[in-house]
Length: 200
Image 1 (tube, rainbow, N blue to C red):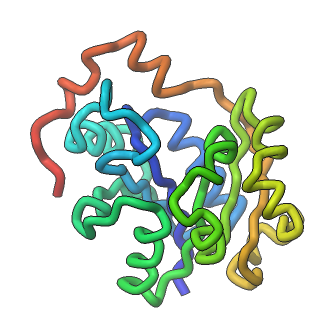
Image 2: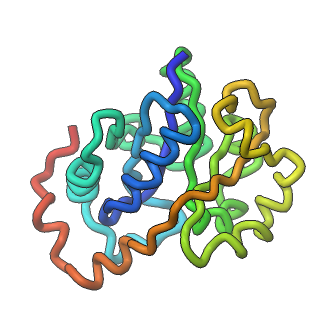
């Protein structure tokens, strides 16, 4: 069975840290591919300052630079808005693929605000990837407290397809402080290089 990690996000813009955690996840989890799901609009983020989907997808294609990292706008195609619905749709569409959700530690403190977050965590395993400054808050967040009884040992990382759900693992990887916020501040016109209207 093909093993695919899902890295969802706004990618506003995508950058080298996304690539770094994807490559590390492939190595640590034994993944065949990582799919970057470029969200049309994160329900928890304001559309203010959000570049077009085409520009964000273009930046993801430029940043991926790896044959097994696949930037996609599949949520736009499937018309799903919430991660729980996106994952369910992907599992129906690709029954031959085992999926694991990849999540930066900065996202974990918000996870309990996701639509039907417990149902989401029961759909597929989750790998939390360490990021600077965020691990402390991640480990005491409501979702992690709820899920701590199902936290998997590091030694079982490559056996994630055998885990009973819900299941979560925290991977301590080499960290990078690069962020989309800093890139936007340094280069406010970044989207103009990618915004050609191309989604497919």
